[in-house]
Amino acid sequence: MAETKTIEGFECYAPELAISNEDFPTEGFEVLFKNEEQNFWFISRNQVILSLFRRFTPISEAQFLEIGCGTGYVLKAIAEDQSHKVTGAEIHVQGLMFARKRLPHVKLIQLDATRMPFSSTFDAIGAFDVLEHITEDELVMAEVRKALKPGGHFYITVPQYPWMWSYLDDVAFHKRRYTRTELKRKLEKAGYEVKYIGSFVFALFPAMVLSRLFKKESKDAQKNQEKIVEEFNIPRWMNQLFRFILKIDVTLIKWGIQLPFGGSLVAVAQNKAGQTK
Image 1 (cartoon, one colour):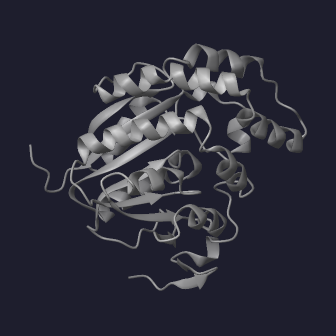
Image 2: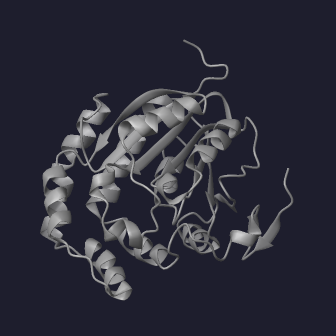
């Protein structure tokens, strides 16, 4: 086990990266914490994640690790579902401080996902809109597989389509957007069998594309940061409408349908070591 250092009360496996690194804008944690519980996209994504988790990891009290847990919004939903034993991991201590407000009794640690300090420990590991922030994404996939028990599952969401790149990706410190072929290829190369891969934000995708086309990038970085906040500050009626429309995605994915296109990709990959047919 790697040596650790305690920072702000958290066990840190990569303390040199706990306060400052270039994977995510730390000011984004406060924005997320204030908006996730009401925002249609986060609510719908949680419903998708839980439906897949129940399908592929049906055991109660599963050992689950979320890397890049941020403010703990997804982690809380999984912890409350069948009393799973969850651990939250984040490279930024600032994110863990917000997660602690949501999950005061859950184990929260700081680590670098390219250097996982675990071996055959977890039934399931999640990375929800995390891999696109990490340059060495294939290394993370390999390290996650090492930390999974034989036959364990890796749950992933990432932004889709490189052609949809915009200033929003730049402000969020994204390194890439994925194609379905690329994500599947990288997972299989790392030693997984892909059990499910499909799109999310399918029903709203035309509106999403139009929105990106009409949003103009500013040369002022501060104004671009402000536009990120504006993404959350939509009228209540519109938020409710979008949430209602995304019920189409949630329902179809729950039925096991792999949606053909959308703003995000959702994948479930199984550690082939020791898996049963």
